[in-house]
Image 1 (cartoon, chains in turn orange, green):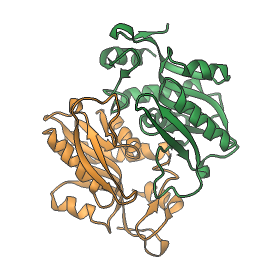
Image 2: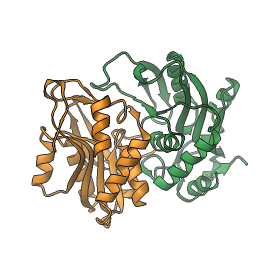
Image 3: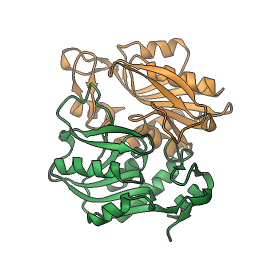
Image 4: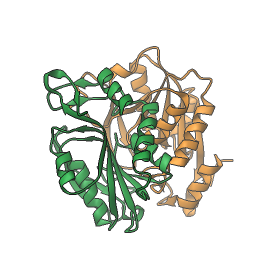
Length: 190
Length: 190
């Protein structure tokens, strides 16, 4: 997606061979117009997949997910990383290890909002090692729902997440596929 | 805002005299169409206020904030509750106590995204005791920026947050003002 590639080239900061910082437009400051374009693109890609729900993880997945949900006319659920006092019922949950934050956390979704008849599109800001995506897949399966595919804003293709999802047979649509961050330069696939 | 009142009546769950659970459309599952209406309403209310940035807190503030930013054509910044490895520079921060979660947390914004020329609209999902709003106000002032007003989706008017902001002279626009949750019933002001 050219508008996204451009924004990454302009405002992305390569912190290391592994870490691309995009806090100027995606995961701290957010560009709403770009999110709208991203949501429209995901909606176009998955419009024939019979999506009934979108699932993402707080916090950076919410903006692209909500714009996709607006276009497709379906609700968005964001998995929570911590249990709050107003989410008290039995929760569907899975553990996710973050390589960026070097912490393990539990992500959870209320079973009230996900049923076995749902066809779910997972949206997330980044796909790296795929731990967050695998946790969401686990939760969706616990609800008996179907994973119809994954929409990723930025994929770090040199890490293992994409290959694992491909091997599992999931449809993954990434709007920017980063081949390498070597030498402080962002190189895209294609 | 009638569409919001209706949604609260339909799907809101009164957990106690103090706690209204709206995880069916606002802070766990999100209704994107309703968020669009909410964003358009905030944008209409503040269209003449010279807003240059919107500030919110992760995670539930992001959806209404992004829709407001889309309409007004300005970036959205969400304050983070934890420092991640990719947000490494000196941060503007403030402490916020959550009565719901009974925890104290630090919220932070990168000074790279907020300058003294910014006129900021604060958007949040709830206003109760106002601790989150006061923390955001503190951060915005640390940046030397101006707080142009606050847009709140649901205000619990029987708690102290609104009165304190009024006394401080801030413009607060709440789309649903809850007078009472007594007896398990949601009563609105007006």
